[in-house]
Every structure is written in C-alpha cells, then in structure tokens.
Image 1 (cartoon, rainbow, N blue to C red):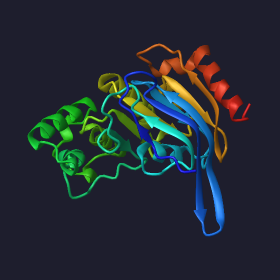
Image 2 (cartoon, helix red, strand yellow; image 1 turned 135 degrees about the horizontal axis):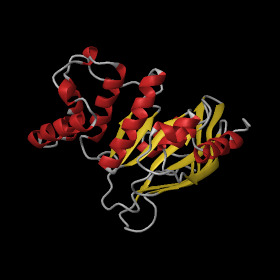
Image 3 (cartoon, rainbow, N blue to C red; image 1 turned 30 degrees about the vertical axis):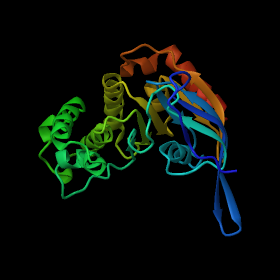
Image 4 (cartoon, one colour; image 1 turned 90 degrees about the vertical axis):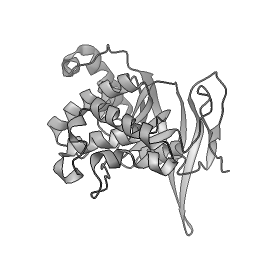
Length: 264
C-alpha cells in the first residue's frame, strides 16, 4: 500500500502525525526495508531531535516528511494544526553540507528559494538581511562561500531554509561535518534561532548528547529498519547553556537514549 502525505487545514491536533509508517526500497527483485514502523506526533513549535545509529532510516523519514518520498504503508498527515499548509511552499531544508552555490554571494544564496517560488524580491531581500543578522553573519552578506568558515556557511544555509517563511524546517545532521568546538557553538546558536524563529523543526542527528541538548522532544529510532524505540519530552530549562550537560537531569536523558539503543 502506498500512502501519500495528507495535508489538512484543520486547526486541532498535532502539526505532524505519523502512524505505522513504512518505507521499502526496491532494486529489481531485491527489497530493502528502510523504515518498518514509525508512529509519532509532533506539535506546532516543537524542536524534535531524532537520534539513532547510522543507516537506521532517519534520513528516509525526513524525506517522507519533505514529500520527496512516498510512504509504502501507514499514514502521514502534515499541517493538521496549521492552516493552509502547502507541501513545497511551507517546508525548508538544511543538509549536512551547506550546498551553497560558489558563484553567488551569501545574500544571493539565501535568496534562491524566494526566486524559485516567485516571491516579491524587494521584501525577500529585506528578509534575507534580517535572517543573516539573526544567524550571526550579517557582516558577510556580500562575501562568497569560499570566504566563510564551515560554521558560517551552515548559518547561511539555515537562513536560506527560512527565507520563504516555512512552517516546517527539516535538518539532516546539519552540524555533522563541523569540528567539535564549532559544533558546540552551533548547537547554542540553533537553540537561539529556534526560539527567535518559532518554527517547528525536525533535527536529525546520530549524536546522543546533541539530541538531548537541542530537543524540546526526542525520538529514538532503532537500528535499521527504523522503528520507534522511544519518544519523550525533554524537560530541561531554557535558555540552555553548555553547563546543563553536567547536570544529573541531562545525564538521565542521555542514559535513557543509551538504554533504548542497547548501549548501556
């Protein structure tokens, strides 16, 4: 059974609902089950961190949410708490690599989705400058990607994902290629950007501490094919600082994830 994402304009219920979602990749006579059974609700304004081992199906789940893949079973409903959700228009994506066009300035890179969607460019340029200020690289708006560090390029990629004011932002291990110190700094910036933008964010990671530090909620996927091993609220105070990682409460959440992944 193939089930297309169902977009609803109802004002009640979770923003995203996944029920017994399944995805199978087929090559000739071979079948590979990438996602076996995922059931999950995500409310409007949450930052859901999704953690699991490499190859467990995290990216496949993200592609289903983005509308890039159809589910082969179960139901996917997006927009049930946000009116007039449009699958292409209302989704922004950030990948592990910034994927900036080297011949365009940072501002022009950020503006790319607005140009593709045919948005009014004067307003989009003003928004681009505001977003670059929000992500902390307003001073680099006229520079080219090669002139920026990896962390600064990823900030530009986040601004690009927000330029068309999407209701849902999907992030696929966006800090995975950064060095440890830059990654810690970007984690802090990610929380600030989330709180300022008030977007619903699904953040894929294989870093257990990163998942706990960033998430308002955390979903744990088992080794592939993906199934939902755990889903819980992270009741840690905001604003969060790196010191919170030394607390007992933080450690308990980390241990919970370790346990679900069979690593304790």
